[in-house]
Length: 56
Image 1 (cartoon, rainbow, N blue to C red):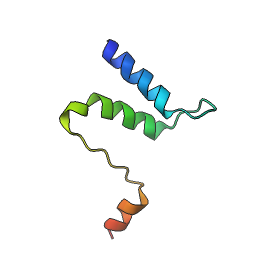
Image 2: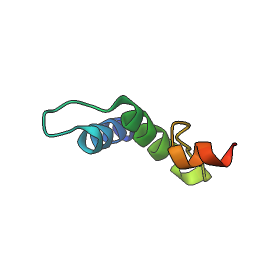
Image 3: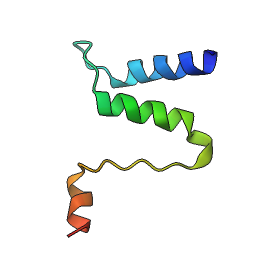
Image 4: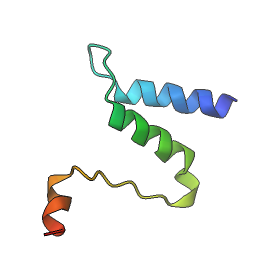
């Protein structure tokens, strides 16, 4: 259970702005990255402008 508490604490720390608002996509990315860090998972943001240029 401590593993998940650490992941949640890290996500909240790294994904909130000075107003305390949380960026949901960054929050999700941090959680998934921490959970699967030992497996070589690559996360790609489909909204990335440079990535979209490659698909055309």
